[in-house]
Length: 567
Image (cartoon, rainbow, N blue to C red):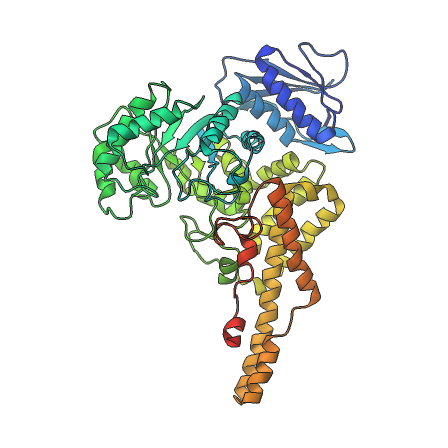
């Protein structure tokens, strides 16, 4: 344990940006910003930022001196410095105004994968990002980078089913420019998911991309999906990619082109023709992306694709059903009571499961940029991002780092245990899983001990899930009892009187404790909407549709035969 209470910062011009960001982080946790100077103060602990141009952009070195104490962060530039001070924040506790570094983090840190990031598309279809402001993006970029990300993925306007919705506070093209600029300030690479949606010639399509992307201060990668959406034959798809790459290089000379091997549903031999085009070794293409609706399983794609093209994964860590990796992949045995109520985009921490999924696919890739539809998958993002940086890190350690970074002052081990318990809640029939009640008690106890966490959206998301799982379990137990009693009545007699008695049983109201628990979900949803913009129902929070993460609209779906028997 090392006491860094009342620390000061030492930074020269090359690290001034990172030192200012770190000072903000310390102020968030202690309500006091540390001083920044170019030389150490005469006394007290300090963190020193030191530029080392021999390091790669994604590397950093930490050196702890125990006597004073002090920590030196060495990096090539802003990105590496952010990684370095974030590791300090991940390994420190903040209790009663005291800053304690719990372990010696000294060492050289180098990423396992060169590409690590997440998709944050400002578009109507998702469940969160359409409600964001530039401040949300700036904050989330820093959060992602704290867990190893070096790339964000944005979406251009007019590539969704709808151009705009009432939650979007800014024009989509202006927000795209702003988000690119914010990423550039942090030296965060920018990937643009840019499907071929418009009706245009090859030349017109390339000009459209040059015009729009030329307005962005930073574009590192263009990602045109082959399908989902996309309907062009493989030959024309690659032709369009090549033309776009050439044109956009006129305004962003270092931009890379990474098309995806996602097959249009209507073209069965698309994959074979895609490989044939890639065998011509077009120099304008830098790599290939694979993800949902893939033309080939990843091991087949790696074997068939010329080796000069690395493969970037497009991992779907946001969906639970009707997706590439449904809950409990590859078994796909999520109980229908959860599938019907929690649905496709509910709050879904799946750290242990995604660790196993990651191990299945990572050997074939140079990293990944996740497919995300909102903040519902926040924990999955941080876990996946750090696995791409340091894949041997135990999941529990990543979760405890998550807890210390995002819930300063709380017990990191208990938070990590609670997250793992939420994942275990989804095993088996909820009526037969008593862990759900223990998980709820666990999160409620933390909330009682740390009432300040009720203003923390990440904590409230976990509490919402814990309460939601308990609502489903209690309703299923209650309704199963009613159905069982009804069936016994109807077996004895099927007279009008027996049917009337059975209906009376089926219409038995829930206990007040259940109704209170169910009603509490709305208050949590309101807090989450106000702070992070997640839309948990259609009527009040303007979700795109009930299956777009609107848990309040789906949690009362039938999970027994009760409604069937009544009707």
